[in-house]
Image 1 (cartoon, rainbow, N blue to C red):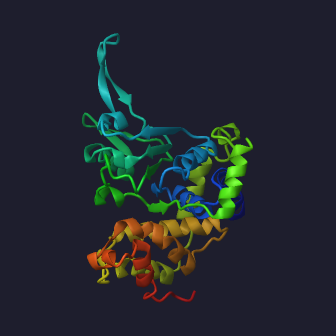
Image 2 (tube, rainbow, N blue to C red):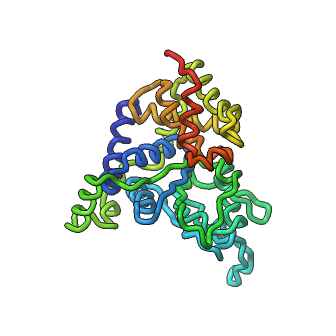
Image 3 (cartoon, rainbow, N blue to C red):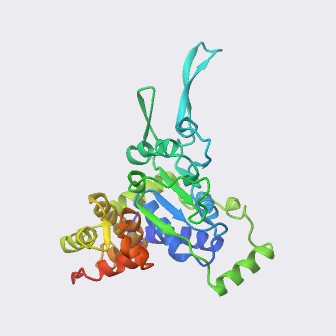
Length: 318
């Protein structure tokens, strides 16, 4: 598959998602980047903005397996990974595979489960395997976790630990749509043109094998040494600024380069530019830092602080 064919296929997925999730083009692009970079993504937004709808629409474009876990306070780790059970008829123990054995996994409202259950995803996300009774079992390929959370509902929620946040390639915000987009969305839904099962009736656009090929293509994109150095400098700048209490680690540098390669493929390029790196740096780094108390008191967001930090790093001219 050449770069132009890859761009066309990705554009078809993008157009299908934009038809369902009106006015969220940046979010759709970032989800596709995470998919192409073989990474996991955390989607945050207030209720009713289409977080779950976006993931279900993506599953409709994909010919592989899709499963959903609704996270609740009483959800147990074995409900996610599976467990060993005794089969009376066969007179032996057998493994019951959990919902993580799929290609696309929707972890809906992930912050509603306690830390013990959230940590069950750590091995799954990092190693792409599950260990039960001392035996490791590989997950299908490709595999991606798409988690959602609601930032305004605090009762009965458990914030994700930093170790797990670092496993997400990107953290994406879904914002309120513009007036024009909300009018278009309201007309589309109330006229019956668009419904919750619209995307389920369409033919898949990409197969698991094609997705693996696209991911391999993205990983092989060439990055100039100056652009690589620029990406690393952006990450390191978060550790050297007094506005940030805890900066991003080396995993952020790796994630930033992987995401920049995926963005280049989506743009139809076989090389990465400094603009690709800087554009994708915010969703890659925002969940990996802690801003200082002074910045929080002044009402600055993570992205506003990152903007100040990134502007101090000179971009190469390549």
